[in-house]
Length: 553
Image (cartoon, rainbow, N blue to C red; front, side, top):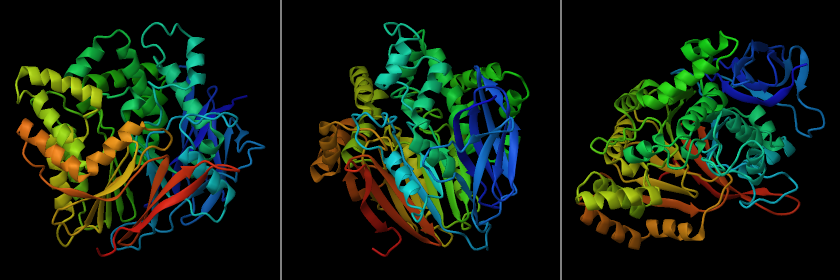
């Protein structure tokens, strides 16, 4: 009899019709996965196989708009979810009451987001990073039926850490291979990536949360390796190592299976040739490996970015890792096709949405000192101060993680111009928010641009990780007047001039394990930041910010 290895994960919920969703599962053998809902709706799909593992993305149709219905998962007709004795409420699919086409009433939307989650240790063991914000959110939702749930959970990168492993996973790897051989205590292949997802998503609280709150994902560097695609010379060095090809292929393959597929709508899945290919053969491993190899060799051949419309709120989730142009004379965060995609989707139907959310794992607006340092470093690396400084610049870039939007000055300017264009004029949305993580602290920054919309950089990280005390002080310095003065010194040395816009910190910085939630209704937007605090009888979420973003200044 088939068993459920991982999942279910509630992924896509249709906000246009309110009558369909997709559920992702992993089984332990080939089988037919079925979802049955309490209201009589449901769907089924046969599993596909990748490297000996069996997956299904089940389309659920016939849902009633504006309802929350409990569901079960069956494999070959046998009930496998919910599991007995879990102590959690039933997993449900919640659908919006009304679609969001222009001219129609739009339901409110609650978006919870964050990034950088190391897997939580078992319940009987204390870990080094404190209380897990996502675990704590799950516990609060599970134990308080009156608590308002997010409509969608945005996971903005570093969902798994391929290069920083837990004690248990290192022991598991040591029993599998000799860790004295490269890549050592890091994942090496697809099978080892599956271990990371099991460790993270089999956590009981996380498993229940992901089964009942729709989630959307994008990768960041640790999903593959720290500083992934920092520079052309970094990439050349990695490609020269014997273990890198298998690592990057396995990282992209596992991301496609465990994260990317669920980002897609049923219509996008139906049009996806790779999804059709892996489902049409008894073993889709070769097809997926060929796809991943092509994506690594030519990043422009694949689009990991995607768009989702939630009524009158638009989300553009942007790939800031694989889509980079790394040549020093043409560095760009996004390749030309990706930049065009972002622009076209931001301007498509301009005036028909009230809020634009741009999901970028890396922040657009950073502490000014760090921004100026990254622009200076980019100038050094492209040779503005000669070969010796170029070598120094490359070393600094890698040691100090100088690879955010500021490290790609032309891309920073292009994104800034696009945001100003979208946010200006009678068709402007009420807000344009760039949602980011990566930097292991949270803050709110606002640019000084003559826009009609309110524009924000909303950064929230980590969900479950930590930061060295010295780095905390570095970020505080980065936002200070002294930091701005030091940043101008970098600009003078690199001959980079002033940034194309200025910005100010209007919230934070906050340090700790945390989540942000945007509540959007009509043309209003409210932001809340909750931090996970350890205590007795258990961890709890403490609200440290509750702010109306659209209120008059």
